[in-house]
Amino acid sequence: MSTQNSRRTRMVSTVAVAAMGTLVLASCSGSDEGGDTARFSMTYATSNNLESPYETLANEYMETHDVDIELNPQPNDNYAQSLRTQLQGGNAADIIQTAPGSGQGQSLIELSDAGFLTKLGSGAEALVPEGSEDLFGADGVYGVPMDYTIVATAFNETAAAENDVTFPADTDELLATCADLGGAPVSAFALAGAAAPNTGMMALSISATKVFAEDPAWNQKRIDGEVTFAESEGWHDTLELIVEMNEADCFQPGAAGAGFEAITNGLAAKSSLTAFVPSGAVHEIMSGPAEGQELTLQPFPSAGEEDFILASSNYSLSLNAAAGDAASEAAQDFLAWVAEPEQSQTFADIAGVLPASGYAELDLSGTAYAPVADALQADRFAPLPNSQWVNQSVYDELGSGVQGLLTGQSTVDDVLAAMDQAWDN
Image (cartoon, rainbow, N blue to C red):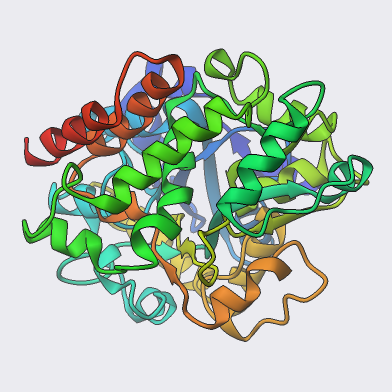
């Protein structure tokens, strides 16, 4: 951050915002008293000390526009809960980071249905990836898509070469590789088993080949009441493979009680070869603890069919419907600027994701994305499944249910029945 930017950007801690509430944001939005400088606030999730693409874009905008942006980064672990509390209390920031679709606490569909968000203009509409329109609002676009995220498996090529391992071509080879490695001192996978979001992501990654490769419209059928998790052969196969992977020592020792640090530390220390993470995490790990090592994104091995992956926009910026008139006008100008291709590419470069538009035409050879390029360009992908689920509880049941599978406290039937119950509640 430049000296000038340090002076102009004011980082407000979560504690400060919670304590001062509406008064702070009300006093910092709109225009200066007696001056013409426009002002608005923006909140977003952060999970590390690396450069934030939101902060970079805000600083670049302030350098070229007469505007003051108050930045309010919040811890990723409780971002959704904090955001909802602030929205319900009327003291949320003017621009808020949301997630396209439904099924998460910060999902823009649920927030727009609740009246918390303002509909955006044509700039945001133009960026929405084809086929993802229903993830951005029922009667318009309520968020500027910021990325195109791939959910696959991060593979440490450097560590794999040192252990004479290549990425498995199918699930049989995967289980054989796990058994050969034996889990220690090197495991095939690093898993944050105590973190339900990671166990849930593992199941989603596997479901790409077990469920959505065969039936990309499975989620719509579940919405229409034509299928259930409990009766789905693909979902049974997904969870049963996790049980087989656990029995084959695919995960590091103590995986069931491990947190997210197990993934970063395992890949960086080369004690694990693979992890279930979104594509931006590969960039983060290679830029930090695993600097100098080569990581790639690999499609989860299928049973011999063509590769199939999960890919969709995972981050968006939305406008708080409760923003004051002056702040709302200034914030909409900023969102229109963010929606331009140059800013979309800036966000992608910093976050290590693909840009929200034009990703299909990119030459991904020689990048971490090269192994998933064919699937992406051949449209062999589906959106992140939980972005189309009806509420967050379904994903919560999946994540906690997989934890139960790892410890032997749940069965596959238990988990799938709980997901159906959460869906129907």
